[in-house]
Length: 252
Image (cartoon, rainbow, N blue to C red):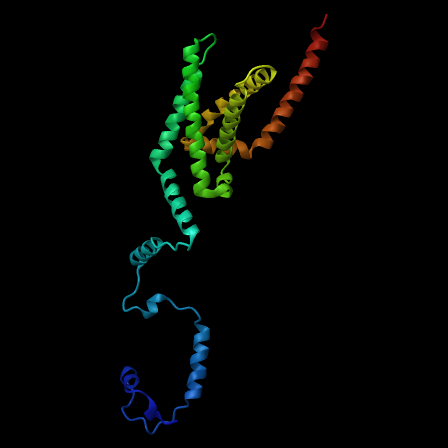
């Protein structure tokens, strides 16, 4: 094929002669060479088609704008997804965590004020305060389950501890309501409630969420748990040996 089929724009761009009638161009060979070039360079960037290149700042700006775009599903799950996103944004707020930490501290002070032989009015006030905080923690666990789902909620060990304490509190409420009657069943339910009330002290562990350094220490202890068991067994063996040795030396 003669070269007069080359467009004028290409002639001007590549500084080719205006008249290429004397040149015979094999366009099939050109296609083969072009295909091989595309195979050698299979990946192209957006900068190849832009008039100006993207530096680091411009690329960060583009990524920030793209991250603001959300793709929502259709149908009923669209509303569910939006509600979960709103709840997730709320529980991530610092005011939410600070409020829960304050509730834990106040609840801890209230449990420390419980003493022997207190008046019925004071005891009723303590129970009322404990019930309020119990429902606050129940609402918190429900919101986290709705926002993150059971799988992601259970992925954090602290959530498992909080969920266990809240579950025991729910069982305590149910047992207290079931023991409202009279007779042996009421007495047995009252004894069961007293057992579950001892687990209220575990609520103090929720303060560890606000202490990042303490959480790090707990993580180290958790990873070294088996080593601590071996050290404890070794210490027990030494204590047992010296106990027998002391009996042999100092017995009458």
